[in-house]
Image 1 (cartoon, rainbow, N blue to C red):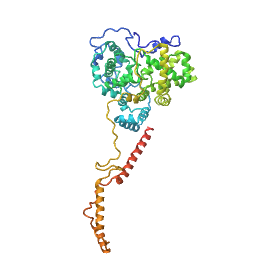
Image 2 (cartoon, helix red, strand yellow; image 1 turned 60 degrees about the vertical axis):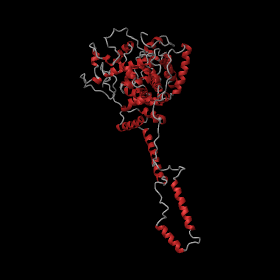
Image 3 (cartoon, one colour; image 1 turned 120 degrees about the horizontal axis):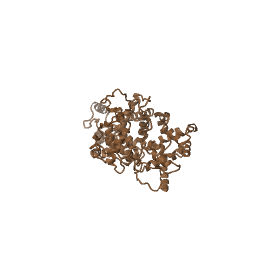
Image 4 (spheres, one colour; image 1 turned 60 degrees about the horizontal axis):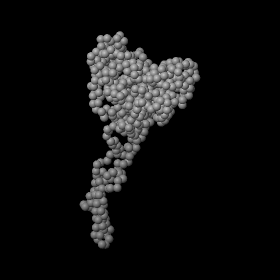
Length: 534
């Protein structure tokens, strides 16, 4: 496949097949720029040393020698924003909505509690995890949370040493050359990837090469590079590799296969869902005979990493890892709805070219973090609708084009589905008791009571009988007074005083413990209600 992994998509419209082939720029790279001269000996060894800067570095590379190696290159005066982009570059953002520090610390505390008790939260409080992902994962914990949500953490535990084994392998030369040529295109204004041969590009090369060895039948696809780059901004190479595996196999299966059949099917699903979300936009795109691949290929295959402002990208990815591909569909539908969803907006989109340009240069307002996230959360598109539409489009595909050539595993919708399908080795949850009692104390309300107390009662009864039967005749008043006085002065020696250890602690302890337990439940409820406002 000389040009790319994409191919023309049949359908209505005269030149749509050629245009669709051009739109699949994120498709499979197989030397699209023609054969390249053999590299110097050892430069494509497939190890991390293969990216050492060569003497023929271009002026553009020299200008971009910033980022994580900026101080060594003498560019320490360049300012970097909080996301790692050079201030003033295309990737940097202007004024952002800052979360108050107190709120951020509270969210960090809650996320630390969830991550430290992940199985318990996923089993009992998955809805709370979803709500907190919609609010945004704290930046300090985002990388760790993505690993837990995607199941990459479990994958790493199940395959110890696998990444190191792949990393040390030489790799397939037909992929190494293509990967190396794509490295400088991935976020060139981010401090991690701006330096040619820097640690960011080296780790990106290692992750992508490892995937070609892990799934040799798929190889490498250009759209995997920005996905892996975003992951590397938040976690080390090994963890990023396993998260990439989960995205390619669980979240977006078949997206990066050779025939791009999965992305074509999802394009038809998106277009069908658009008819319900925005009939005006659907009618306009139908009239213009614009194939979905022309505008949604890069959106979906890169998970909007090369489309949205960076703060919006991170919020979308937080929800994507939790809820699955449903979030990608919702974001695409929201963008189409607000870009083409009214007659006023369509006045400037009279033809195919104008419409495509409108979708390529979206209004910053509709991509703004708060607006976009709110629209995505409120859009009523569910997994069931997507799967039902998938079956419809798959049936149409089989009727018109035959069976799919690439057999992809079923798509899993989010963290809960992945956890249920692939449970990892984890200890059994042991709920901690709310009320603690001494080891030798009986449980309140239990049937079994201490035997010594019954024995003492028996002895007391026997002594009372003996005292009554000591004289057949009733005692005189003087004897009664003397006996009562003696009884008050000293108890019978055979009757032992009540031992506090053998007493039932329930009457004394149950009331305060129950109130404390009730108080803890109230505080938990208030904490959850407070969390909804953070």
